[in-house]
Length: 67
Image 1 (cartoon, one colour):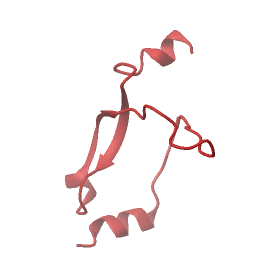
Image 2 (cartoon, rainbow, N blue to C red; image 1 turned 180 degrees about the vertical axis):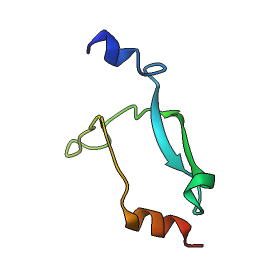
Image 3 (cartoon, one colour; image 1 turned 90 degrees about the horizontal axis):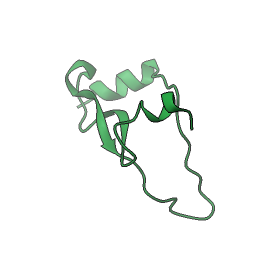
């Protein structure tokens, strides 16, 4: 891993994440912060993928505002 990649993470046990803990308006419930990084691959048939970019769609917004 290049130095620039490794320095973008707080440490080997956390990862940057955008997450929400409950439904509601996105400006109130969506957070950017550190979350625990996965420590092990749960099954021989599973893989762990590093995501470099993601997006949301109109349906994501519509689901997030339903109460």
